Picture 1 (cartoon, rainbow, N blue to C red):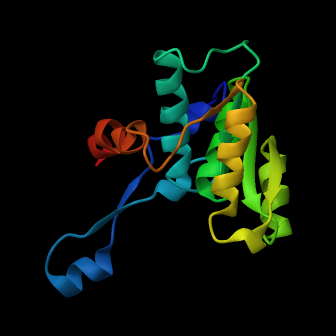
Picture 2: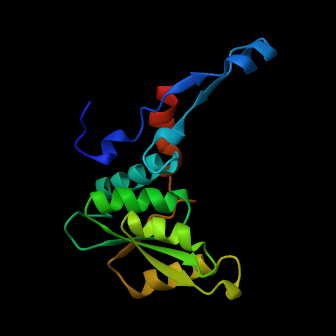
Picture 3: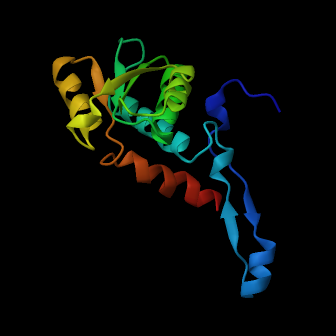
Length: 163
């Protein structure tokens, strides 16, 4: 099958029966392989949902020159960089300066601009710097993965239906 976009590969991940565990427990046990999503995790799914939800609400508008900003260098950051880049948004991810150079390079390969925070300022230095940037630059939009209702909604409305 040929796809037009990497985004078309998000979701629809397989479910596998864990045969040995099922036999040992005497019940059927299944696992949903969200690692089959582009970027290697379920976070690609939530990243795309958060972006599309922000577009539906008029918070993000393609072609307006907006930048998605998030204090994340993990799988959500990868998902946002990938989906945001494909959809035409700039993506800036704030990570602590002691963050792995290999992971930083991966974020950049997915199209993100990586901003380093001073890790000596504490465990949330990247979150605090992201808020500071957001206050100074009105064209930046933070999707706030921890508080964004589209994050769990992606699983209620898509992942759950696939199971």
